[in-house]
Length: 495
Image (cartoon, rainbow, N blue to C red; front, side):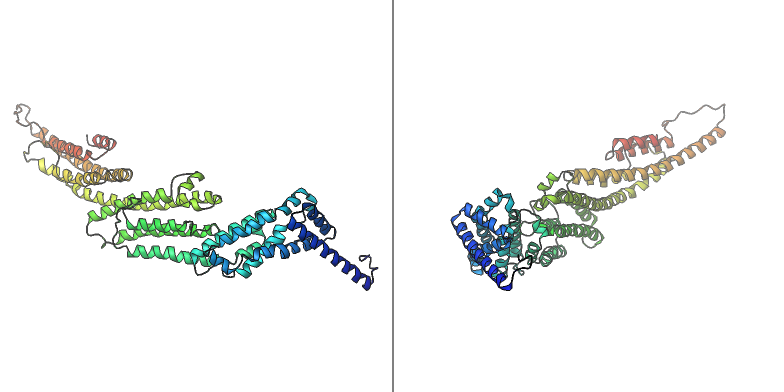
């Protein structure tokens, strides 16, 4: 009749009054039935609310008369003090109410699909939870205390996730404005800025203040203090009391920045000529750096495509959905580390090559030692060659026990450069010997009388032959630290 517009104002008032009294009776009956757990009466009341199109009234009545009294006793600063500032204890008590006291409603709604219009968790429990939390715990975010902030944020997120699941969808946590507004009480950008200053600032200070390069005995068995400094900083990024999944991208970027700064330190150190007093100290530093970079690779850039292997690393704190991203981070880190490793190796290779190359130049003096000097035939390697191979053999003996893989690569590169240079020098000497030998042969053939008999000589080895023999002895001496393949090539070129 109201829709047809045939009700007078007096009649409308009477109907409204009757409706209100009816709602009062239903409300009272609904609340009494809830207290006694009478499912039959509760079901009738919910159907009556539905017939009257007053579902919101039912949920509001439950919120104000049941949820509010139950939750208000927990959401206050006094309880927070009692729980030693652990908000999770308050949340646990509140969730007990949702999971036990409200079960009778959940059971009714599960058994009566026609009542699916009701969602007491979302429209009664959550609304009151949000309201009382804001009013009773206004300083829950503890913005000046990052440790407490992180702990309370994680507890709040976990609790809201449980509520969202009870509401029927985890997506509410991301999609519902009331859930998002509740979480925005926690200022995540400010929290990360504080952690950034603590971690990155502390890392930079330590790097600048580590005047003593080398570390004492440690759990990583690394050689450099800055390696320990890096590991502590990265590990702090993913510490369970620091890291937040909601800031995963920020903490990943921070850890990448820490590694980049650590790697840049090597490049800077190589340019600091005053840091070490002699080449031997430089050499030790570079080798120890390579040892540490191998350790860092295992920690932050393991070779794997399996997401399960992430659980064996410092990144295990991250949410499983980030595993594929972490695998990509491993590859990126590995590339960056390998670039610095190669730079350090090249530095060593050049030093060892220069130390050896200086002595190899003396191969050009061999012809002068034997041509027209009546010097005896050689029986051992030249002094210059003995001195030339010392840097390589000493280097190999010094470090072969600690860094075998990188050492082989460095030695192979040094040997390759040395043999190429020596090959060029020997070829020049032999070409000169061949030309001289040919000239002497022509000159001799012109001066020899066919009727004269050749006089016997005590030493039948020619000067040119002595020169070749000396070079062979030198090759054998050089071959001691070289590979068989390299030696075979040299022998073919000089035979």
